[in-house]
Length: 96
Image 1 (cartoon, one colour):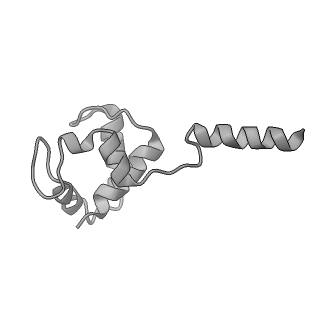
Image 2 (image 1 turned 135 degrees about the horizontal axis):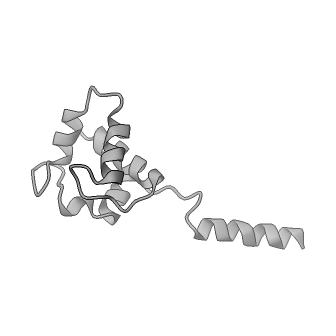
C-alpha cells in the first residue's frame, strides 16, 4: 500500500511541474519574451545580445533584472515563477 502511495505522490509532483526544469530558452518563448525581444536585433525591446552585453560585468545582474521583471519597473510585469525567471535570465545573460 505504501508503495502505491509513493508512486501516486511522485506522479503528482511530476505532473505539477515540481522537479521539472525548463530550459531558459523554453521559458523565454513560453512566457512571451520573444514577442518583444529577438536574439540579434532590436524589436520592441533590446535584443537579447544587447542585454547580455550591457550586464556582462555585473555580478548582480540576474537579481536586478529579476526584481524589475517581478515588479514591472521599466518593463512589463512578468507572469513567471522565480525558477522560471532565473532560467530565462541565465539564458539571456549567457548569450554572446
